[in-house]
Length: 118
Image (spheres, rainbow, N blue to C red):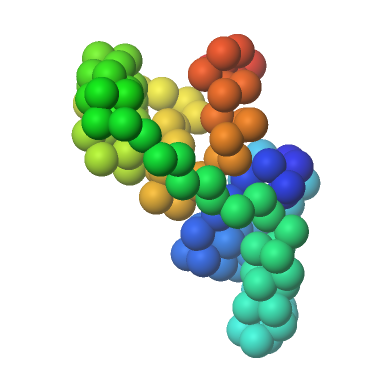
């Protein structure tokens, strides 16, 4: 994963560092002190792309909300927490946008091309 193209919440990074990521080469680091894990978490955040807030006109926002409601809610949920009605049947589970926040470049790539294997 390219950490320059993603942004993760503190809670998500802490979980990944503590538990690792099943099915990947990312191991759990439970032998480290909490302070060391927090330092690693802060370093990872320092190399991540900042979350880009886009200013939208009210018309653009209304259109985007309509598209999200029509095509995204069933998987990502009404508020973007990855808990839509179809989410339980999907592997991998849909992204919780409150935890994992892709860069604008990554979001556009996924919207245009999807995610292989999903």
